[in-house]
Image (cartoon, rainbow, N blue to C red; front, side, top):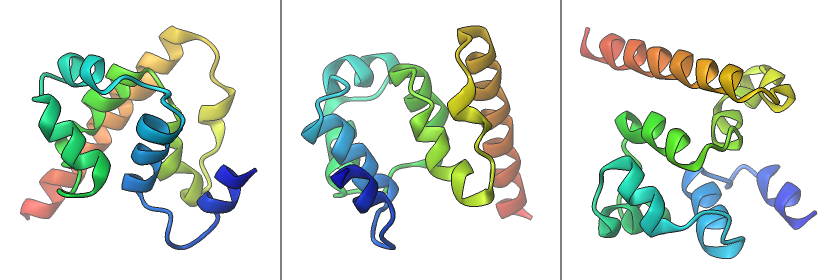
Length: 113
């Protein structure tokens, strides 16, 4: 319940979601995720604690490392896309992750224009 209340505030940032899942809920292990992402554990800790902004180019690595679509939902729910929470099939989830990566790449390209 507190989680939902926190999410509904304007102050709930992606960093808050990371902190909630990694530190408070201990949903993921930092060392395991850092290794799967191919980043140094200290870098991941800095992103989780909000000492450094989370780099968008590492987002798809994070989703793959955690295998958690809640991270995608943080960005899709405000846009009205709620189909992610209905995905049960892992193969479908992997497809969604690939699509998200393509979307992120397109966003980066658009920034460069």
